[in-house]
Length: 421
Image 1 (cartoon, one colour):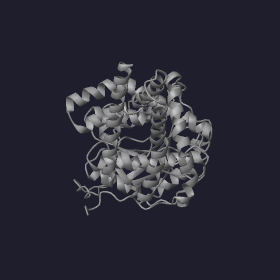
Image 2 (cartoon, rainbow, N blue to C red; image 1 turned 180 degrees about the horizontal axis):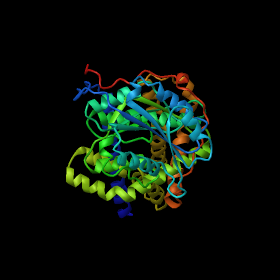
Image 3 (tube, helix red, strand yellow; image 1 turned 30 degrees about the vertical axis):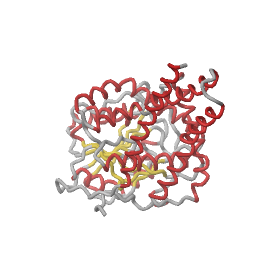
Image 4 (cartoon, rainbow, N blue to C red; image 1 turned 90 degrees about the vertical axis):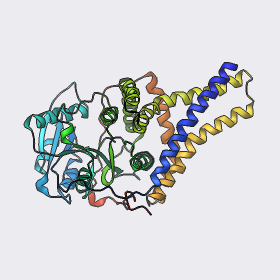
């Protein structure tokens, strides 16, 4: 029993220190900084790349939003990678004004493989572009996206994640859960780290990469979460990823629980693949670079599934100690309540706080806020399931919401990088 008590106290300290660190970093999202100076004055040339698999229902709206960018149309081209398509995606994309590359590969189906296949061709052509921007086919893009990404390039940044908003946040409690999750992550993870010089992470879509850094080898990712994998590869090299709050892309989220379960399971398995592949390299990077950015990247990978397992061990230790008369019934109940509060109540409070800070209307999201504990709780169950059974095959999420950029309610841009008050 004494050894169990010591182990339990050690786990408590690990969890406490980890979350105190995250809290301190999150507070930095409230800092208002001066805008970064421009290192050069240039209008860069972009490739807007859209990997798409059977996206005939939504691809046209994305292309239209890209064609209507507040940016010189001679300085960007729209490419669609019609990846193993069996519908009219390629034809619709061509008729809408995109340059279409059709790819067929029954084994390598993920977006990472499609991107590398396309980029290898552009690298061999020595294509005359300064940067790429990657979008999912269900996206619609704010008219100032390219203009604001161009500003980031002029400020000297080479990999930048844009603000991934939700185009259907009030469709169901599931879409609301996604929206609250992303809004919270954008402010308390990405913005907070960007404000103090740490690295953000790519977030699946709506990101920019300078073409030069891809030319040596292309896009080399093999996991189900190619965005996180690419981010970790950069952090391991000591390279920081940037953040652009005002480069906004709107993403469609699954309405139903079944598709959401499948999608989040894929993300969890992808994280596990990254843990297996990059934990040693991240630890080596901490030793080599000795920077807070490297440490923060290492903590990110430890803070996903490993921290979840530690939390489960801590929760289980309470029941073991209670069964051995090591703690009272009152202590057991108190510890369980603490776990429930941290797991379910704090996310709701954080979500409301973020919505207030970002000036988003709370009333349309009340149902989502009430159900948010169910959304996050189901993710815990997904994590447990994936510890024992992992599906490594990519599964398509159907996108059907025919929403144009003019139909999206656009909140005021989050205040950041403004002059310090």
